[in-house]
Length: 458
Ligand SMILES: [Zn+2]
Image (cartoon, rainbow, N blue to C red; front, side):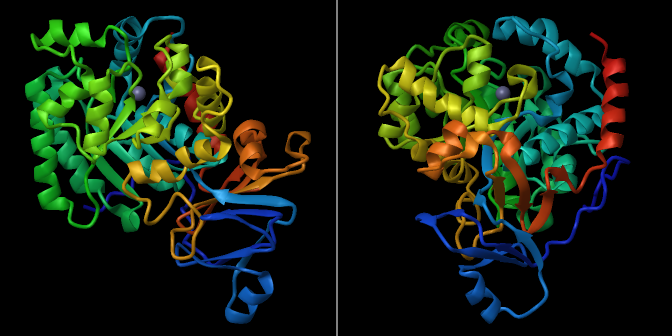
């Protein structure tokens, strides 16, 4: 059961420590902004949010100190749809429609990727994420004991859910692999690493396969899911021609909408993280709402592949849980949640000619607590509150883009840059300190990426 793959670019994961985050200018806590408050982290959790004097009076022990004077402390960002293992394919194929992009460029390149290169790409992606303020991520890719996204998340120190994707043509083998993945990694490090099932999409998995994956998931939950539920994630309603594609591939009727079709198959549940959800019918919206499934919107990937704009404000107005994501670096080039948040909000305002839509606070919630809800982890992360896990980000506010600040949410969504991220704590461990990742030897990682890039070619 115990496998901690170590490759030469990882340094040792630090133990969770006791940390006093001293005296920030702003602390974005659950329930609003706290001023003149420091934060004590102990045993992976937020132990206390109070004035520094009060904390020091109550807890006398030894602790590390992060001086946050002049900074903003905020909850870590939650990226609910990505493929971190694809980071080796950043910029590999551009300017193609989704299906040609996949069939002509991405799938053939992926066939060349060995488990070690998947892990290398995943480590690169996980490092990019933590350096840009993301503390939790969902990532769909491929599992092997010799190298995986879960191993990269584990070793870099990110909180995450990883999957092994299922396609119609890989079903039996992929389901076996999914079970192995769950057995090897689900719940590791006190629940920080979890595994989900993931049929790739309704156009690459037929109805029987979708039902089989769901049956497998329920079986896995019986066996391994008592403490942490095994969720499900897939691409839903991404392309305009998806309905036609499903109908012609599998001889089924989907004309009332893709999400409604998944609902009829019994696949759309509260455990589903549905990526994209761009082309939705009225029935789809109802199906999403009824099922309590969560949406992971990837505005940059959708724009870049010319897929359209998801109607996030409409979904949110109906009470559907909308979260924000980047998708993989092969389609969106960056795994930068600040960029994704800003685009998510601007698109709603721009395409609807309505600046009141998707407020900064609503957008920030979508990128934090709603993401945690989608991951079924809102009880432990997604906001800063005593008793929750310490997943937090310290933003340095000395750049010209960070002054003045009238409203922290306006700054975070519209003016902040990922380069403003100075320190990051995940599960009580300092993973980024003074803009440097503490768990990876970046020199070695750069060398490995360079030599793997040569092997992949163009
Ligand atoms: Zn995707």
